Length: 265
Image (tube, rainbow, N blue to C red):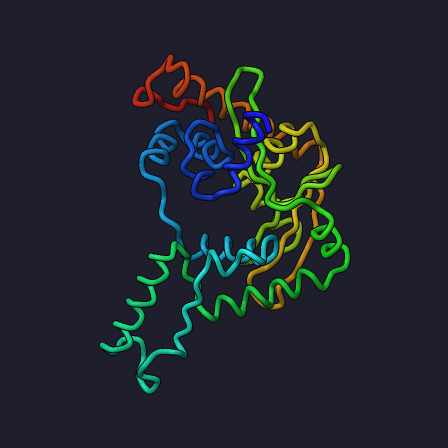
């Protein structure tokens, strides 16, 4: 196993992946698109997981690595509270919940509720009932870590939801499923185009797919292939972000505090 393979193996551990500062991730580039100061703050003060982030991680785990679900997530079932006739504001029930949260924290597990687990199971059922998607997921490598260096020597990293011999695929959840036009809007808003180009170029591949599923009933599902124009738009974003990274965090030719955006509206 060479040095890069050993590093990629370490990236399998989410704690290492997100704590590593030696390689640039797509998340870091997204902050750079706002400003160097946004990335500096992100690196100094890593954001805490929000309930939406935990839900998304739990869904991904259930789809891609179900055997690891119980190791990573703890189910908080309020139906097991000691005072069944009272709500969660009672003193005894609040103490019980605090004990449950402490147990999960000590076990290094994220908390999801029983309602969230039931929703995740319904989403998975909706996803896998489509033979094309079930086949695509079953025949692909899952949670594949990758690392590479740009032509300028900047070290980068990523973790692919799904990777086959001729395509990469990423699973996205959405609170408001609105068809392809809504997802195009989301791609621009959340820079999914940059993610697609960043990973595709790293592996010299030109086929990228998004599997999209709604987080609410009826849990609609879609598969979208990306166009060359989509990848080109994302490529322009990550190229600009990497230039900013080199300028403010590698060569440090400019100071983060001196950055000011200019332009014509």
